[in-house]
Image (cartoon, rainbow, N blue to C red):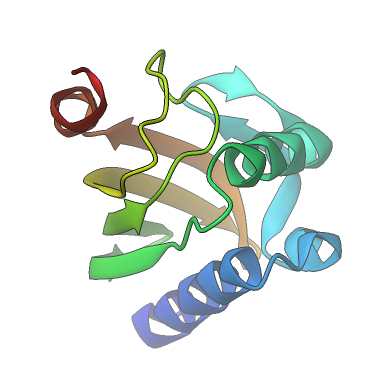
Length: 130
């Protein structure tokens, strides 16, 4: 897959997430996907994302920087959102928060097979930790 194709697939994946098109997730995510070393499978990955959106209904995945090479994409995602349920162990305040996620994706046959991500939990704690 070319870098341009890989980047295009990744941006379409983010559109799928932002439009909450959960039934289309299998177009972008493999049935045997892992997340941070955990074998979730497509149904578990979908359940994780749906729970994220229940916790933060205005959650939008905004790619700040995307780098692609070989079968991999690295992305800095930026979030400005308002949790409505406890998030990362913190109670919601009703105020919007801003934080980053650094995510690394491995693709196989145009689908994500592995996700390794790291959230900026210090930024979340500083805003919700009171």
